[in-house]
Image (tube, rainbow, N blue to C red; front, side, top):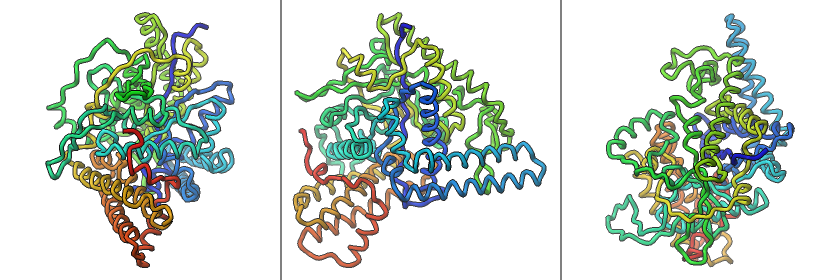
Length: 577
């Protein structure tokens, strides 16, 4: 059958570094929840499709920091303990509901017991406690493509030093090669945030005396590190209003948005460029290969992201917010968009199957219509790119993995749309036009305000200070390779900087979802970096370290043990000017 065009899901999987930084309500249990409710269910969906002779061709983002955590031995032990606790909680709920004569709730409690028992079995037996390898196997078999991200999801447009962006990307490539055995082809820019090259000055400048200085465009760093493509939101390509991907999920953002939107004016939309084509983003420097850009399709995006009329808001689906304590299990359904927690009705698992099937068919038809319209207008087949946070599927939207399975199967059976990975599409359909794109992100308003506003701008002052200090340390002591202890100190300082740079902290402060935790993490990594920097100066100056200083270094190394291949040279000079 002749194809009308191509389609790929892009699922961006990410969590900040939480191992050894608390467990519940904030900390390692975030990772445990995501592994149980999203990552293993996604693996099961992909492998189920493959077993049925369907290659899902998902483009899957796994951030380096998430990959490091999932590969960690401490996670594997924590995760099995967590699943045991969930099984115990479900068992207690079953007993209580049966005792109280609540058979409907008891039925859902048994569903949870089966769910966690199967996740435990899959983790230990099917995936041999190695989630990263399970995804890598699917990539090696040609069924998915794994892309990378900034090392710790640093928000590139607001970092004050080009060296910081260089280090985030170089660590990402190094980590990817170590875990997946090859060079990454694509990258998910953290928060889909892009900045072109121009004379830039820091938005938070306590001294008020920083002269604007030349910055490279983000695409230049990608080109230098042989990354072939990235993704943007449609408003960066065409102008117009950003969809915004978080507003419906966080009340605090809605309050912030009401203040911001009074001054926010979207760029006028143009019809010249289309999200159904790929383009080259040209580098301003001679001799650098341009990088391809894929654009998020706004029509399919709204169909899932919109809290008002997106699929996850269907009244039959499991409600994310209402939980039963102790145990934290969910037993209620969304009910309606207006229903508060007290009005939520009982979840009926049997009622969701027809909904999933109907919505999967609706989504498939939407893709087909978009591609046929593009083909008719442009006389060439295009691609629909539908990017989402992976954690939406299973964690936020319990039925999401089954919906993904149904969509991919429906597209396969229909036969008129070519399921592809982003890299696979690029291999057969190279861009022909070079464009420039403005600064922005996929957050509300399409700009930086979630990550830079009244509630979190103080964090940037400390990040900017540490960025500059790391460069000074790398230049002064980075070449003293014979002093292995000094190099260990510098590497640990660089790890603390990486964790400090994570965009998650500003996001969590803005949404109030874990404000105190995020603020404490910013302060912890800032203070620890400062002490490590002082220890580096002592050691670099030829003095011996005290027992206390050695103990402090060892504590930091055990607590934040990610990126064993970190390289101080990345923080010393720009590889390409």
